[in-house]
Image 1 (cartoon, rainbow, N blue to C red):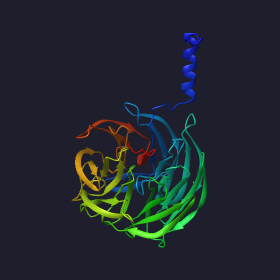
Image 2 (image 1 turned 135 degrees about the vertical axis):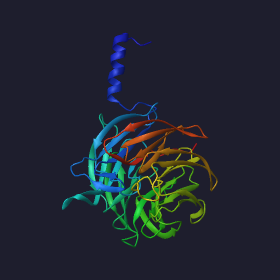
Image 3 (image 1 turned 90 degrees about the vertical axis):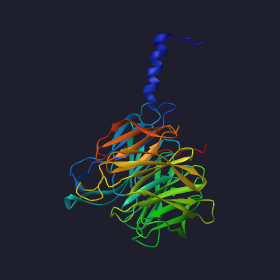
Image 4 (image 1 turned 180 degrees about the vertical axis):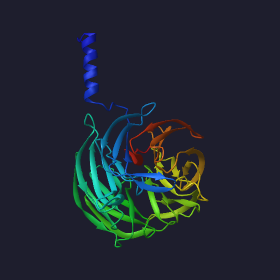
Length: 389
């Protein structure tokens, strides 16, 4: 039996809680918020002097709550996987594909910033700023947490970083052979031996090979839809799903299912989801996928394809087939979507409202339960990778 008096025990508990702010059972999500760009009746307007941020959230709390915020360069340009969290939730990476143009504060210019955030610090803190390639967008950690890949959209390359503890070290770039290929997001397969890279410039999905810290382009690729963009891999390792940005004319766009068991992987199914699928979020058990659909909500009100809301659509994954389960209206110009570990809560980034909209999922339907306000437009979000269940 403890010999501490009740008051002493209480003081010890408070002290430990302050020293370790992220309690057991917490599930961290990080939202990168672009404060530079706002949507004014369908036009992206640049605000000079605005400060981008990253918000750290406990998605496992009920309701989810903000744990902290740091200043970090971010950008709405590129897929909303511009954030990655290490498998052990020790650090997060935030990329920035654009910055305020030094020559004209009313415009943006390409950027290459990679920010490392210590999630164990109290409060969370930026501990390093590195450089990837120009137009740095989608970023992912390897399953072991010892590598990170960053897609460089404006130069046709993928940057490789080694990871040791909380330290990232640049380890070179991989050229995809075309400076205009537009690599958007790089994501590892669960075995850590391969990665996929979406390329919206030439409509391909590249397959990379990984051997230890060595990453090479196999020159093999898939073709599925027009302008492949966001991509996520099931934690089961059986399928990947990516969306297509399409031609931007108000036509219906698609998402694609990749059979990862095929040698090499191949696109085996395509489903129409509406105007401009932006974010792809895989449930932690790999049973469902959520898609954010802009639905014309980012357009001018006078545009014939305008709608006053975006959509979140959930599909059940059965083998390599998808079946619709639920959908809900959300805000405008919405970006990424992530799931809680229990699969019951989704957080959706909405740029116009500058908030994360929270949805409850019961396996059959979605309902709005609240929101988390952030400073700036939430443009990229991830949680740490889920594990097969």
